[in-house]
View 1 (cartoon, rainbow, N blue to C red):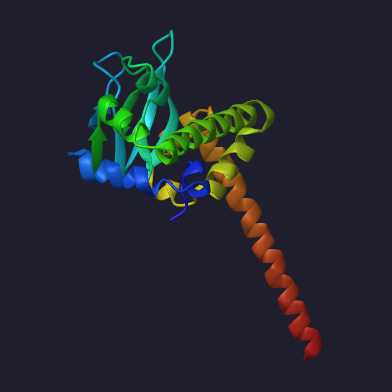
View 2 (cartoon, rainbow, N blue to C red):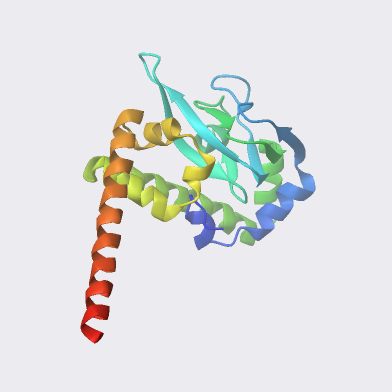
Length: 209
């Protein structure tokens, strides 16, 4: 399965996954339950064995925004807060039933301090997370909402079957009604392309006859 967070595909985090599965505390979360809440306790890191979560941020006006996703074989974590040993700045909520193995910051440090190889794994994770976040920030300003939606589908096509449209709309920064119009426009374009292709095949068959 293709990952939404592409750094997971670019790098081999097998040793860290195995560490989380071996030493982490297994938790099951039902849909809409929270892995963590903003401002509540110390940030935790979890390896998602099954399911998916989204990251929720409340702005100064109290409006709620989805700012990220993580799915199976990825990690659920407010990484900057986790590294700084601070409370989370976002809520992380289950989009569907999840199985997550959670480790503490102390366990994370134990993994990092094992040897230079584990240190490099964590360093690459930090670098790739920064790159992914930076690319998404540029896309938010440089691309149209339709382009951002198409890019999201290209990264993770099955997301439309697993995530409500209003949450996808929030992630790409538009109202649900705007996303509905974008989807309708894309569907019309695809229909016209299919019709044109079908017409060409019919004309070719007539000529051969």
